Amino acid sequence: MKDRKSNETDIREKENLERRRAEAEAARIKAEIENKKREEYVKKLNEERLALLKAKQGITDVDIEEIIREEKMPDEKLTFSQKVSSFIYLNKWWLGIAACCAVVFGIIVFDLLTRKNPDLTILLLTDEISYYSKSSEISKVFGEYVGDVNGDGKVIVDINYMPISGRDDENPTEVQGDPYMLNQQKLYTEMQTGIGVIVIADSNADEYLDPENTLLNLDELFPENEHVNKYGFYIKGTDFAKKISDDNGISDNVYIGIREPKAGMDNEKRIRKNFDIAYSALEKLIKDMS
Image (cartoon, rainbow, N blue to C red):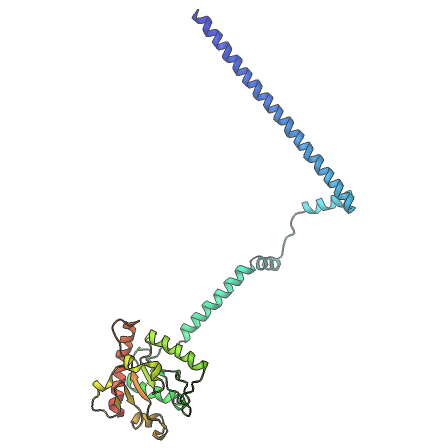
């Protein structure tokens, strides 16, 4: 009895399997027929479009064959110069950016190679043009006292001339324009960097320099020096004046001062380092030139 039921079950499973196979095959055949119909439809549609295009533009079968032949022709081999031209054309934006970067890099390298490395920097803030014309003499005098600090075999004292008051001595209430405003901004930048700590200024520049808060009080260090008054070593009547110009051509209110390093200042370490170098030179100059 059991063998009979088992045989019936096997028969039913085989029938089910055959039925599923038949259904799968029918589905495959149906899909092939539908794909073939779809391909024939697309082909027919393209033929109709081509016929319409030919009718509208007057294109013959010969023309179409020529177009197809040209499309199937292999790419022409380019010469080296043509390849270079094509590469430049296709990459012109990137090449342009690379060229700009190369120019900027070249400028930076050139600046680093040609930049002066001064042993001392002096801020020349007075409006009196005679001091600008005597820049080389001022540089030479200070060079005798500062020496070759950086060890490059040269003594360089850089004079940064930037008059800041713009006042006319005949009309002291009138202030001139843009160049002086630019110099005031430059002075502010210089005060932040701490490179130039020696100043040659006058009473007109005091409004912008604020010497009582920025310069060292020299009175406390040179109490018996008649040319020292508060924060300035006044040039007129000194050997310094004689070395750079005729003493008669020097006004009474031009002085030499030095920035005082204070805790909490921007770039305090750099300012203090430059102060130590500059003060040593200034101390010797004041003692010798008074």
